[in-house]
Length: 219
Ligand code: UDP
Image (cartoon, rainbow, N blue to C red):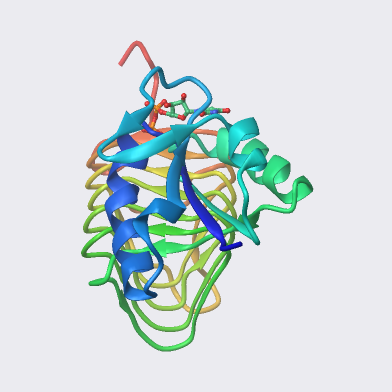
């Protein structure tokens, strides 16, 4: 039997990752029939030419090994599914667009999804199940935790620390920190679309605007 590969999530995020997964396997001469979506809610049996299985069905397929990339933007869902996959012997799979630029000394944890035009420059540490969407980048000397999500065109400059489960919105810019004194985005923080982050962002808070400030729903 052969290995079986899956993109978990057949919604927006998963449909963006699937073509990258397909191309990556083609480059390893692995047939497209060994690649499926997993989705626990989708009503469609096939999405964009690829079979959609429930997770339980995926586990029942003949396979020497199972590899899954979690293509779901919600980081808490990714964390839960990662634990379930691990318990079932399913391996975390990293899928990367062919034009991703990765410079020197980049440590990337398992299960990442790297979209087209992503750049990871030099001397960077990134945790598990990182999502870097279209045109986002991570500059030198950054340390990024587990289950971090970059929306399209999120820009993270040098010497920044981003803790687990933080979400960086589309087009946001994070100012560079200094060696030994990084700018820190706290655990689970949300940086709104287009925000210009010039200072640390406390864990669990949401910041918006230029310069980025705490979001309050009343404005
Ligand atoms: N999903 C799933 N199992 C889970 C949680 C989510 O299959 O335990 C699927 C869900 O059915 C949906 C997708 O993951 O199809 C998440 O899609 P959504 O549109 O919420 O967001 P996206 O991450 O694609 O932006």
